[in-house]
Length: 198
Image 1 (cartoon, rainbow, N blue to C red):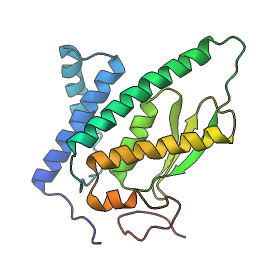
Image 2: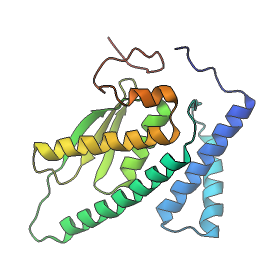
Image 3: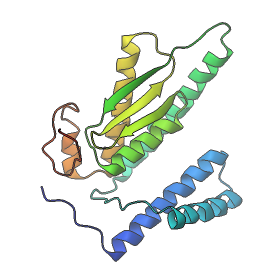
């Protein structure tokens, strides 16, 4: 597989527009409501972030799949509500002290875009927080709340991989879709995966 060539002028503008759109969405999520003021504020803040803190170019070699995108959005809303109820129940339970844990989960698709989107979606759900991202190895280190035993750790790992799967099905390339069935801990032969094998 040959590396993806750097995007041309149109590709850079397209990537900037997509990044600005995501920043506007995140800004409105922070405020908790979509209003004209939040849309304008998100646009101004997003534009300032892109101008003063430019990110390295992230190539997008996949394609948008509307049905999978709707599944991703629907599953995210369900997880958001469910996790919010769970965290609220923990907060009001008298005398209960939940245990937390940090787990490392190796993603199957180790592109920058997949790492960023999966980490962002996980961080927005109450009870999970990204502690560190190992970009070279494609590993997310996630703090999870209310861990009672090994089965909770395995369940959290499965949920993280399920989020990755929905992201890749929504915007991934055909090659990335094939990688979803691979063992995440197996060595990758794809040169697009930046991993340290030393």
